[in-house]
Image: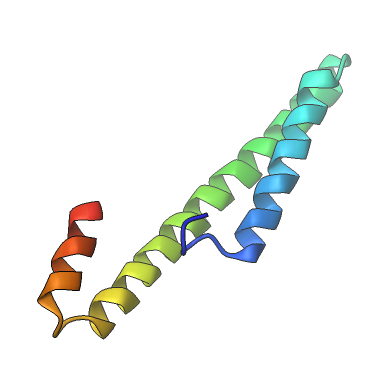
Length: 79
């Protein structure tokens, strides 16, 4: 996994995937709508947390390696 994906984010991703599976297997339209609404909230929250974590990871990385231009340049190309 990417270094900014924390254990908490991984657990949330697994929970989101299980919820999607419930949505796909559900036959009742009302239950399906409720499950999908919960899935969307969780999906959006995971995306938000991942983005925050990624920004934090790169900020810390560049702060630590600001004097080593070779590492700095190599990592900035990945962005």
